[in-house]
Image (tube, rainbow, N blue to C red; front, side):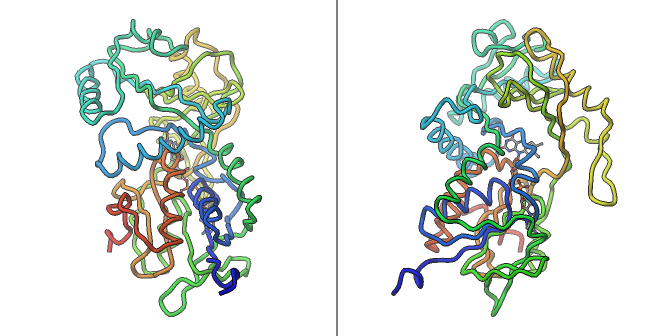
Length: 373
Ligand SMILES: Cc1cc2nc3c(=O)[nH]c(=O)nc-3n(C[C@H](O)[C@H](O)[C@H](O)COP(=O)(O)OP(=O)(O)OC[C@H]3O[C@@H](n4cnc5c(N)ncnc54)[C@H](O)[C@@H]3O)c2cc1C
Protein backbone atom coordinates (compact mmCIF):
# COMPACT_ATOMS: atom_id res chain seq x y z
CA UNK A 1 0.00 0.00 0.00
CA UNK A 2 1.41 3.43 -0.87
CA UNK A 3 1.73 5.97 1.92
CA UNK A 4 -0.74 8.22 0.08
CA UNK A 5 -3.33 5.44 0.08
CA UNK A 6 -2.87 4.77 3.80
CA UNK A 7 -2.93 8.39 4.93
CA UNK A 8 -6.18 9.21 6.72
CA UNK A 9 -7.76 12.46 5.54
CA UNK A 10 -9.56 14.36 8.29
CA UNK A 11 -11.55 17.57 7.91
CA UNK A 12 -11.93 19.63 11.08
CA UNK A 13 -14.66 22.29 11.20
CA UNK A 14 -13.99 25.03 13.77
CA UNK A 15 -11.05 27.33 14.45
CA UNK A 16 -11.39 27.42 18.24
CA UNK A 17 -9.14 25.59 20.70
CA UNK A 18 -10.91 22.24 20.29
CA UNK A 19 -10.62 22.24 16.50
CA UNK A 20 -7.04 23.51 16.47
CA UNK A 21 -5.83 21.18 19.23
CA UNK A 22 -7.41 18.12 17.62
CA UNK A 23 -6.05 19.11 14.20
CA UNK A 24 -2.50 19.32 15.54
CA UNK A 25 -2.80 16.02 17.41
CA UNK A 26 -4.09 14.38 14.19
CA UNK A 27 -1.12 15.73 12.24
CA UNK A 28 1.25 14.33 14.88
CA UNK A 29 -0.27 10.91 14.20
CA UNK A 30 0.27 11.18 10.47
CA UNK A 31 -3.17 12.29 9.26
CA UNK A 32 -3.68 14.65 6.38
CA UNK A 33 -5.70 17.49 7.93
CA UNK A 34 -7.76 20.33 6.57
CA UNK A 35 -9.03 22.85 9.14
CA UNK A 36 -11.94 25.05 8.11
CA UNK A 37 -13.36 27.96 10.02
CA UNK A 38 -16.34 30.16 9.31
CA UNK A 39 -14.25 33.26 10.00
CA UNK A 40 -10.79 33.62 11.59
CA UNK A 41 -9.12 31.51 14.27
CA UNK A 42 -10.18 32.17 17.88
CA UNK A 43 -13.04 34.30 16.55
CA UNK A 44 -15.62 32.87 18.96
CA UNK A 45 -15.46 31.61 22.57
CA UNK A 46 -11.73 30.86 22.41
CA UNK A 47 -11.12 34.52 21.67
CA UNK A 48 -13.02 35.72 24.76
CA UNK A 49 -12.41 33.12 27.47
CA UNK A 50 -11.40 33.53 31.09
CA UNK A 51 -9.45 30.28 30.57
CA UNK A 52 -9.01 29.39 34.21
CA UNK A 53 -7.46 25.91 34.22
CA UNK A 54 -9.25 24.11 36.99
CA UNK A 55 -11.40 21.33 38.33
CA UNK A 56 -12.57 23.22 41.41
CA UNK A 57 -15.90 22.56 43.10
CA UNK A 58 -18.11 19.53 42.57
CA UNK A 59 -19.01 17.70 39.36
CA UNK A 60 -19.26 14.13 38.00
CA UNK A 61 -16.22 11.95 38.62
CA UNK A 62 -15.48 11.33 34.89
CA UNK A 63 -15.68 15.06 34.19
CA UNK A 64 -13.36 15.79 37.12
CA UNK A 65 -10.90 13.15 35.92
CA UNK A 66 -10.87 14.55 32.40
CA UNK A 67 -10.27 18.06 33.71
CA UNK A 68 -7.41 16.92 35.93
CA UNK A 69 -5.85 15.19 32.91
CA UNK A 70 -6.41 18.44 31.02
CA UNK A 71 -4.48 20.41 33.63
CA UNK A 72 -1.75 17.76 33.51
CA UNK A 73 -1.19 18.37 29.78
CA UNK A 74 -0.88 22.10 30.40
CA UNK A 75 1.64 21.35 33.15
CA UNK A 76 3.72 19.45 30.60
CA UNK A 77 3.53 22.34 28.15
CA UNK A 78 4.38 24.80 30.92
CA UNK A 79 7.41 22.76 32.04
CA UNK A 80 8.86 22.92 28.51
CA UNK A 81 9.08 26.71 28.84
CA UNK A 82 7.89 28.29 32.11
CA UNK A 83 8.69 31.77 30.76
CA UNK A 84 5.71 31.87 28.39
CA UNK A 85 3.65 34.87 29.33
CA UNK A 86 0.42 33.20 28.11
CA UNK A 87 0.46 30.06 30.26
CA UNK A 88 1.02 30.35 33.99
CA UNK A 89 0.28 28.34 37.12
CA UNK A 90 -0.29 30.85 39.92
CA UNK A 91 -3.18 29.01 41.56
CA UNK A 92 -6.82 30.01 41.96
CA UNK A 93 -8.46 31.97 44.74
CA UNK A 94 -12.22 31.94 45.35
CA UNK A 95 -14.56 33.28 47.94
CA UNK A 96 -18.27 33.61 48.47
CA UNK A 97 -20.41 36.57 49.52
CA UNK A 98 -20.80 37.47 53.20
CA UNK A 99 -22.90 34.96 55.11
CA UNK A 100 -21.67 31.95 53.14
CA UNK A 101 -18.77 30.85 55.34
CA UNK A 102 -20.21 27.35 55.63
CA UNK A 103 -20.66 26.99 51.86
CA UNK A 104 -16.98 27.82 51.39
CA UNK A 105 -16.03 25.32 54.10
CA UNK A 106 -18.18 22.64 52.46
CA UNK A 107 -16.57 23.25 49.06
CA UNK A 108 -13.13 23.01 50.63
CA UNK A 109 -14.06 19.78 52.45
CA UNK A 110 -15.34 18.28 49.18
CA UNK A 111 -12.19 19.25 47.31
CA UNK A 112 -10.04 17.71 50.05
CA UNK A 113 -12.13 14.52 49.92
CA UNK A 114 -11.21 13.97 46.25
CA UNK A 115 -7.56 14.89 46.70
CA UNK A 116 -7.84 18.27 44.98
CA UNK A 117 -5.27 20.65 46.43
CA UNK A 118 -7.34 23.10 48.47
CA UNK A 119 -6.39 25.47 51.29
CA UNK A 120 -9.03 27.14 53.44
CA UNK A 121 -7.82 30.63 54.34
CA UNK A 122 -8.86 33.50 56.56
CA UNK A 123 -8.29 36.94 55.00
CA UNK A 124 -5.14 37.41 57.10
CA UNK A 125 -3.63 34.25 55.53
CA UNK A 126 -4.08 35.32 51.91
CA UNK A 127 -0.94 37.43 51.48
CA UNK A 128 1.30 34.53 52.46
CA UNK A 129 -0.53 32.18 50.04
CA UNK A 130 -0.65 34.38 46.95
CA UNK A 131 0.47 37.96 46.18
CA UNK A 132 -1.27 41.06 44.90
CA UNK A 133 -4.72 40.61 46.48
CA UNK A 134 -6.61 43.16 48.57
CA UNK A 135 -7.65 40.86 51.43
CA UNK A 136 -10.04 43.48 52.79
CA UNK A 137 -12.33 42.53 49.88
CA UNK A 138 -12.74 39.04 51.35
CA UNK A 139 -15.73 39.14 53.73
CA UNK A 140 -15.19 35.79 55.44
CA UNK A 141 -13.03 32.87 54.34
CA UNK A 142 -11.50 31.92 50.99
CA UNK A 143 -10.14 28.87 49.19
CA UNK A 144 -6.76 28.83 47.50
CA UNK A 145 -6.16 26.03 44.97
CA UNK A 146 -2.39 26.10 44.36
CA UNK A 147 -2.45 23.67 41.40
CA UNK A 148 -4.58 25.81 39.12
CA UNK A 149 -3.48 28.10 36.33
CA UNK A 150 -4.58 30.07 33.31
CA UNK A 151 -3.88 30.25 29.60
CA UNK A 152 -4.50 32.89 26.96
CA UNK A 153 -6.23 30.82 24.27
CA UNK A 154 -5.48 33.15 21.32
CA UNK A 155 -1.76 32.80 22.16
CA UNK A 156 -2.06 29.03 22.59
CA UNK A 157 -3.84 28.78 19.24
CA UNK A 158 -1.06 30.81 17.57
CA UNK A 159 1.48 28.49 19.18
CA UNK A 160 -0.31 25.34 18.02
CA UNK A 161 -0.83 26.74 14.53
CA UNK A 162 2.93 27.08 14.07
CA UNK A 163 3.11 23.31 14.49
CA UNK A 164 0.01 22.86 12.32
CA UNK A 165 1.71 24.64 9.41
CA UNK A 166 5.09 23.00 10.04
CA UNK A 167 3.42 19.59 9.79
CA UNK A 168 1.71 20.47 6.52
CA UNK A 169 -1.87 21.11 7.69
CA UNK A 170 -4.17 22.93 5.27
CA UNK A 171 -6.11 25.91 6.61
CA UNK A 172 -9.25 27.43 5.11
CA UNK A 173 -10.31 30.63 6.85
CA UNK A 174 -13.45 32.66 6.16
CA UNK A 175 -15.04 29.52 4.75
CA UNK A 176 -18.54 30.61 5.77
CA UNK A 177 -20.77 28.01 7.35
CA UNK A 178 -19.39 24.55 6.61
CA UNK A 179 -21.50 21.41 6.74
CA UNK A 180 -20.84 17.70 6.84
CA UNK A 181 -21.30 15.76 3.58
CA UNK A 182 -22.86 12.33 3.99
CA UNK A 183 -23.05 9.48 1.50
CA UNK A 184 -24.50 6.08 2.27
CA UNK A 185 -25.02 7.13 5.89
CA UNK A 186 -21.32 7.90 6.40
CA UNK A 187 -19.46 11.22 6.62
CA UNK A 188 -17.53 11.80 3.41
CA UNK A 189 -16.22 15.32 3.85
CA UNK A 190 -17.19 18.95 4.23
CA UNK A 191 -18.83 21.50 1.98
CA UNK A 192 -18.75 25.23 2.59
CA UNK A 193 -21.30 27.95 2.02
CA UNK A 194 -18.88 29.37 -0.57
CA UNK A 195 -19.27 26.18 -2.62
CA UNK A 196 -16.02 24.43 -1.72
CA UNK A 197 -16.08 20.68 -1.18
CA UNK A 198 -13.41 18.79 0.72
CA UNK A 199 -13.51 15.00 0.76
CA UNK A 200 -12.33 13.27 3.93
CA UNK A 201 -12.35 9.88 5.64
CA UNK A 202 -13.47 11.49 8.88
CA UNK A 203 -14.91 14.85 9.93
CA UNK A 204 -14.73 16.58 13.29
CA UNK A 205 -17.39 19.18 14.12
CA UNK A 206 -15.88 21.51 16.74
CA UNK A 207 -18.08 24.54 16.21
CA UNK A 208 -18.41 25.67 19.82
CA UNK A 209 -21.91 26.88 20.66
CA UNK A 210 -22.89 26.33 17.00
CA UNK A 211 -22.16 22.59 17.21
CA UNK A 212 -25.79 21.51 17.85
CA UNK A 213 -26.92 23.57 14.83
CA UNK A 214 -24.12 22.13 12.69
CA UNK A 215 -25.15 18.50 13.35
CA UNK A 216 -28.94 19.06 13.36
CA UNK A 217 -29.18 18.58 9.55
CA UNK A 218 -27.69 15.10 10.12
CA UNK A 219 -30.70 14.21 12.29
CA UNK A 220 -28.61 14.48 15.46
CA UNK A 221 -30.04 16.19 18.54
CA UNK A 222 -27.57 17.75 20.98
CA UNK A 223 -29.24 20.03 23.55
CA UNK A 224 -27.64 23.46 23.71
CA UNK A 225 -27.38 25.35 27.02
CA UNK A 226 -24.96 28.04 25.84
CA UNK A 227 -25.53 31.43 27.54
CA UNK A 228 -24.35 34.80 26.27
CA UNK A 229 -21.32 36.11 28.16
CA UNK A 230 -18.60 38.73 27.94
CA UNK A 231 -14.87 38.94 28.45
CA UNK A 232 -13.25 42.30 29.17
CA UNK A 233 -9.54 42.98 28.69
CA UNK A 234 -8.17 45.92 30.65
CA UNK A 235 -5.49 48.41 29.79
CA UNK A 236 -2.05 47.59 31.27
CA UNK A 237 -1.56 48.33 34.94
CA UNK A 238 1.22 47.59 37.46
CA UNK A 239 0.23 44.60 39.56
CA UNK A 240 1.59 41.47 41.18
CA UNK A 241 -1.46 39.20 40.91
CA UNK A 242 -0.63 35.56 40.09
CA UNK A 243 -3.86 33.72 40.91
CA UNK A 244 -7.13 33.58 39.00
CA UNK A 245 -9.82 35.06 41.26
CA UNK A 246 -13.43 33.91 41.34
CA UNK A 247 -15.43 36.18 43.60
CA UNK A 248 -19.07 37.24 44.04
CA UNK A 249 -18.88 40.27 41.70
CA UNK A 250 -15.90 39.63 39.42
CA UNK A 251 -13.72 36.87 38.01
CA UNK A 252 -10.21 38.12 37.29
CA UNK A 253 -7.17 36.58 35.73
CA UNK A 254 -3.78 37.98 34.80
CA UNK A 255 -3.33 38.38 31.05
CA UNK A 256 -0.19 38.97 28.96
CA UNK A 257 1.12 42.53 28.85
CA UNK A 258 0.27 43.39 32.49
CA UNK A 259 -3.41 43.46 31.60
CA UNK A 260 -6.32 41.60 33.20
CA UNK A 261 -9.13 39.50 31.75
CA UNK A 262 -12.46 40.00 33.53
CA UNK A 263 -15.61 37.94 33.49
CA UNK A 264 -18.76 37.29 35.55
CA UNK A 265 -22.46 36.73 34.98
CA UNK A 266 -24.33 39.49 36.87
CA UNK A 267 -24.17 41.81 33.84
CA UNK A 268 -25.82 39.32 31.45
CA UNK A 269 -29.20 41.06 31.80
CA UNK A 270 -27.60 44.24 30.37
CA UNK A 271 -26.54 42.53 27.12
CA UNK A 272 -28.71 43.20 24.06
CA UNK A 273 -28.72 40.78 21.14
CA UNK A 274 -29.45 42.46 17.80
CA UNK A 275 -31.22 41.00 14.80
CA UNK A 276 -27.91 40.74 12.88
CA UNK A 277 -26.56 38.45 15.62
CA UNK A 278 -24.31 41.09 17.20
CA UNK A 279 -24.37 42.02 20.90
CA UNK A 280 -23.96 45.27 22.79
CA UNK A 281 -23.68 46.28 26.45
CA UNK A 282 -23.63 49.79 27.94
CA UNK A 283 -20.10 51.13 28.51
CA UNK A 284 -20.90 51.98 32.13
CA UNK A 285 -21.72 48.32 32.87
CA UNK A 286 -18.32 47.30 31.49
CA UNK A 287 -16.66 49.96 33.66
CA UNK A 288 -18.65 48.68 36.67
CA UNK A 289 -17.13 45.22 36.17
CA UNK A 290 -13.66 46.83 36.01
CA UNK A 291 -14.45 48.73 39.24
CA UNK A 292 -15.50 45.49 40.94
CA UNK A 293 -12.23 43.88 39.81
CA UNK A 294 -10.21 46.83 41.08
CA UNK A 295 -11.52 46.26 44.61
CA UNK A 296 -9.91 42.80 44.62
CA UNK A 297 -6.40 43.93 43.70
CA UNK A 298 -3.83 45.32 46.16
CA UNK A 299 -3.69 49.11 45.85
CA UNK A 300 -7.06 49.13 44.02
CA UNK A 301 -5.59 50.26 40.66
CA UNK A 302 -7.80 52.30 38.37
CA UNK A 303 -8.77 49.58 35.86
CA UNK A 304 -9.84 50.78 32.43
CA UNK A 305 -11.48 48.43 29.93
CA UNK A 306 -9.45 48.30 26.71
CA UNK A 307 -11.76 45.95 24.79
CA UNK A 308 -14.62 43.59 25.39
CA UNK A 309 -16.17 40.78 23.40
CA UNK A 310 -19.61 39.27 23.79
CA UNK A 311 -20.98 36.00 22.44
CA UNK A 312 -22.10 32.52 23.29
CA UNK A 313 -20.23 30.44 25.84
CA UNK A 314 -20.47 26.82 24.64
CA UNK A 315 -22.31 24.69 27.21
CA UNK A 316 -24.11 21.43 26.34
CA UNK A 317 -27.68 21.17 27.63
CA UNK A 318 -26.80 18.72 30.41
CA UNK A 319 -23.56 20.52 31.31
CA UNK A 320 -21.32 17.52 30.49
CA UNK A 321 -18.92 17.36 27.54
CA UNK A 322 -20.17 15.91 24.23
CA UNK A 323 -17.21 14.11 22.67
CA UNK A 324 -16.91 11.33 20.13
CA UNK A 325 -18.37 9.74 17.02
CA UNK A 326 -22.01 10.14 16.05
CA UNK A 327 -23.78 6.78 16.14
CA UNK A 328 -26.11 7.95 13.35
CA UNK A 329 -23.28 9.12 11.08
CA UNK A 330 -20.13 6.99 11.28
CA UNK A 331 -17.01 8.97 10.46
CA UNK A 332 -18.44 12.18 11.94
CA UNK A 333 -17.14 13.19 15.36
CA UNK A 334 -18.13 16.09 17.62
CA UNK A 335 -16.35 18.12 20.28
CA UNK A 336 -18.68 20.41 22.23
CA UNK A 337 -17.99 21.28 25.84
CA UNK A 338 -17.99 23.75 28.65
CA UNK A 339 -14.53 24.51 30.09
CA UNK A 340 -12.93 23.96 26.71
CA UNK A 341 -9.86 25.87 27.85
CA UNK A 342 -9.10 23.34 30.61
CA UNK A 343 -10.01 20.48 28.25
CA UNK A 344 -8.44 21.83 25.06
CA UNK A 345 -5.23 19.80 25.00
CA UNK A 346 -6.54 16.54 26.45
CA UNK A 347 -9.63 16.54 24.26
CA UNK A 348 -7.53 17.00 21.13
CA UNK A 349 -5.28 14.15 22.24
CA UNK A 350 -8.04 11.66 23.05
CA UNK A 351 -10.34 12.49 20.15
CA UNK A 352 -7.54 12.35 17.60
CA UNK A 353 -6.65 8.90 18.92
CA UNK A 354 -10.24 7.74 18.42
CA UNK A 355 -10.41 9.23 14.92
CA UNK A 356 -7.14 7.62 13.88
CA UNK A 357 -7.52 4.17 15.45
CA UNK A 358 -11.25 3.67 15.94
CA UNK A 359 -10.50 2.63 19.51
CA UNK A 360 -12.72 4.35 22.03
CA UNK A 361 -10.92 5.92 24.97
CA UNK A 362 -12.45 4.89 28.31
CA UNK A 363 -12.15 8.42 29.73
CA UNK A 364 -14.69 9.62 27.16
CA UNK A 365 -17.19 6.79 27.76
CA UNK A 366 -19.81 8.89 29.57
CA UNK A 367 -19.53 11.86 27.19
CA UNK A 368 -20.82 10.25 24.01
CA UNK A 369 -23.27 12.23 21.83
CA UNK A 370 -25.47 9.13 21.67
CA UNK A 371 -26.74 9.77 25.21
CA UNK A 372 -29.28 12.24 23.79
CA UNK A 373 -30.77 9.92 21.20
C1 LIG B 1 -16.54 34.36 28.97
C2 LIG B 1 -16.01 32.95 28.95
C3 LIG B 1 -15.33 32.45 30.04
C4 LIG B 1 -14.83 31.16 30.02
N1 LIG B 1 -14.11 30.71 31.08
C5 LIG B 1 -13.54 29.51 31.03
C6 LIG B 1 -12.68 29.08 32.09
O1 LIG B 1 -12.45 29.82 33.04
N2 LIG B 1 -12.11 27.84 32.01
C7 LIG B 1 -12.33 27.02 30.94
O2 LIG B 1 -11.77 25.92 30.92
N3 LIG B 1 -13.13 27.40 29.93
C8 LIG B 1 -13.73 28.62 29.96
N4 LIG B 1 -14.55 29.02 28.96
C9 LIG B 1 -14.89 28.05 27.93
C10 LIG B 1 -13.89 27.92 26.82
O3 LIG B 1 -13.36 29.17 26.46
C11 LIG B 1 -14.60 27.30 25.63
O4 LIG B 1 -15.17 26.05 26.05
C12 LIG B 1 -13.69 27.06 24.47
O5 LIG B 1 -13.00 28.23 24.09
C13 LIG B 1 -14.52 26.54 23.32
O6 LIG B 1 -13.68 26.26 22.24
P1 LIG B 1 -14.31 25.61 20.95
O7 LIG B 1 -13.20 25.30 20.03
O8 LIG B 1 -15.23 24.51 21.34
O9 LIG B 1 -15.30 26.73 20.36
P2 LIG B 1 -15.06 28.21 19.82
O10 LIG B 1 -13.85 28.83 20.37
O11 LIG B 1 -16.36 28.92 19.98
O12 LIG B 1 -14.79 27.98 18.29
C14 LIG B 1 -15.78 27.52 17.40
C15 LIG B 1 -15.26 27.70 16.01
O13 LIG B 1 -16.17 27.10 15.09
C16 LIG B 1 -16.39 28.01 14.02
N5 LIG B 1 -17.69 27.65 13.45
C17 LIG B 1 -18.88 27.63 14.07
N6 LIG B 1 -19.82 27.16 13.22
C18 LIG B 1 -19.19 26.89 12.06
C19 LIG B 1 -19.60 26.38 10.81
N7 LIG B 1 -20.86 25.99 10.58
N8 LIG B 1 -18.68 26.25 9.84
C20 LIG B 1 -17.40 26.60 10.04
N9 LIG B 1 -16.94 27.06 11.21
C21 LIG B 1 -17.83 27.20 12.19
C22 LIG B 1 -16.32 29.38 14.67
O14 LIG B 1 -16.10 30.37 13.69
C23 LIG B 1 -15.13 29.16 15.58
O15 LIG B 1 -13.91 29.30 14.88
C24 LIG B 1 -15.06 30.32 28.91
C25 LIG B 1 -15.73 30.82 27.80
C26 LIG B 1 -16.21 32.12 27.82
C27 LIG B 1 -16.91 32.65 26.59
